[in-house]
Image (tube, rainbow, N blue to C red; front, side, top):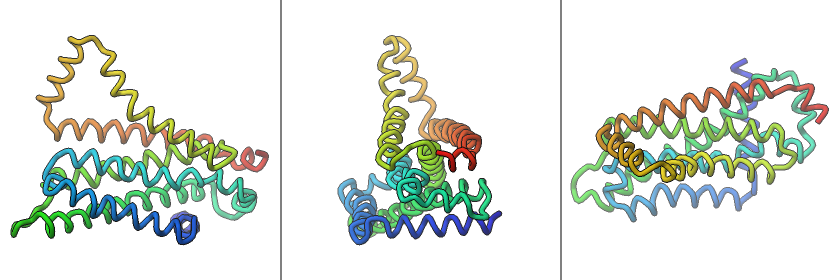
Length: 243
């Protein structure tokens, strides 16, 4: 099964890299340039030393995976290649996991490349003779949070793409779902009574960045598992062929 997943991943990677031709490749380089050079240059050493960097690197793979994962099944349906894929010898799990793994490796891999490039940029432009590095806790947090974020976007994207008739529809639905995930907690907190808001703010302030990061990781892990379980349950080859 591992070999079949790798075969599926290789197919998806080729389509991702060739998607949009030279324009797509330029967009890829621009994205790396923005998160790996421009923003570190603008923020300075705080890009590395501030715990807020955890938020940036949790969002970056979410954005990158969302751009490509909507094509997973909706794109196959638009190109009339879905029937050929489903008629192949690859198992259901290999197809599903291969597409998810391709999206995760794309978004998470680019985030890691951008993070390392940003580290170099900060040291060259703002190091002032001193080596600026992430603290061990922040560094590990960035790696884990960005991975969980990429899995979240990939699993949600595949789940939506399974039933979307077009890539555009899948992208719009996924974007709305991501926006709801990000903004509902914010507006929900604002809707709370003032006393509850004050208590929540005090609790978060006393908890510290490390505990908050652990809570977010735990929540993302639960969401990832739930979405992947839903995608596995909804991936029915016979039904997709009939669709």
